[in-house]
Amino acid sequence: MNPYHFFSRAVKKSQAGFSLLETMIATALLVTVATGLLCVAVLATTTTESQGHLAARTTEYAQDKMEQLLALAYGDGTSDTTVFPAANSGGTGLTVGGSSNPSAPVSQYIDFLDADGNLLVAVGTTPPAGWFYKRVWQVTNPSANLKQVTVTAIVASGSTHGQVPQSTVTALKTNPF
Image (cartoon, rainbow, N blue to C red; front, side, top):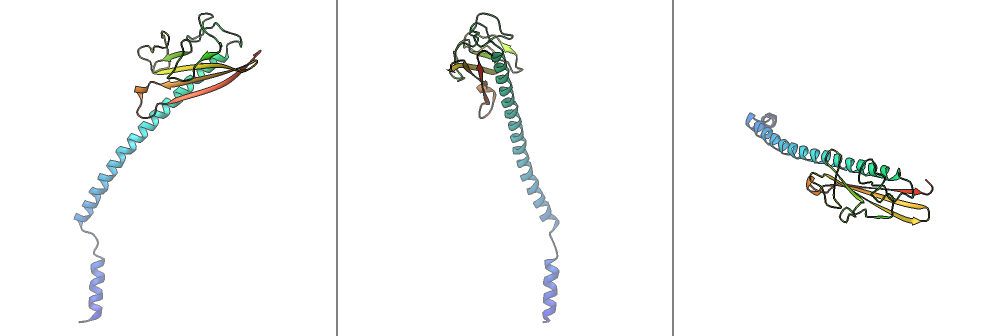
């Protein structure tokens, strides 16, 4: 037997390539895996966008409440900030009190918004129908002529999948400003 003859047959066989059937099976497996990954990618993107949107809104609404509170005079103890614009009487203004914990709200230091950010009328700490965002605030007096205002906004717990977006902002207000 000629040794070169065996070698040339081995080279030809190794260069034969894949059959059409093998190529179709490999393509089918690739498409199946890609489809599965695409579904996961779409779900992850949708969830991330939704959570990001809600987190941005909670921050925006916490900042809105903070601006409303900081617009009050340092000694204001009567403005009703549960309505917008703030009423001149019937509220707590910047009186020390409240809670920045959404699970332990204090009457007159809480308000609710619908999904579009519109203020809803609530009685005490009882959420009104259709609420989507809850804002709570706390005013403390850490030293003379200084008030610390903390506002926390949170999304209704049943409105998201996973962790509930929440934002907290804090600012200081000095007397006489």
